[in-house]
Amino acid sequence: MLLVWPVAAVAGPVAAYGVAAILGFALSGFITYLLGLRVVGSVAGALAAGMMVTIAPKHIDHFVNGHLEHVTLQWLALYVLVLHHATEHPRRVRGCGLRSVRRW
Image (cartoon, rainbow, N blue to C red; front, side):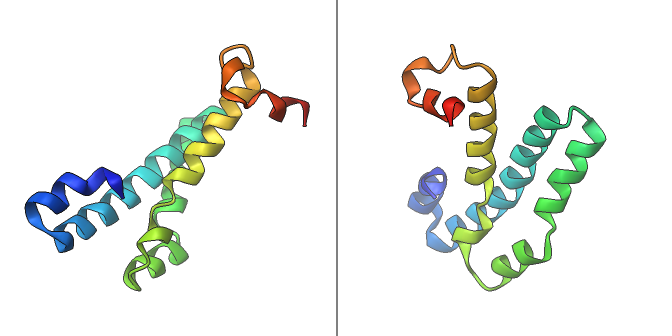
């Protein structure tokens, strides 16, 4: 992850992997929480969605087996969150190329 490049430069690759794994879990849960809050509108439901993604057995299994690319799930949730926002407010994203999604 490019987010932990400063950690890798200062503390080495092992520390950077640990920070990336922790950030992967935290950001995956938080961005899924934001997505759930936007879609459902309930804090309890959004919190449950964030917790389910964070502590899912497959998510933890990939962490234990060292698959960092499967631990950092926040990008998928962030993409869906931005896509949901773009389809609700098409005027704000006119120049981003996401306008065709609304017609789809």
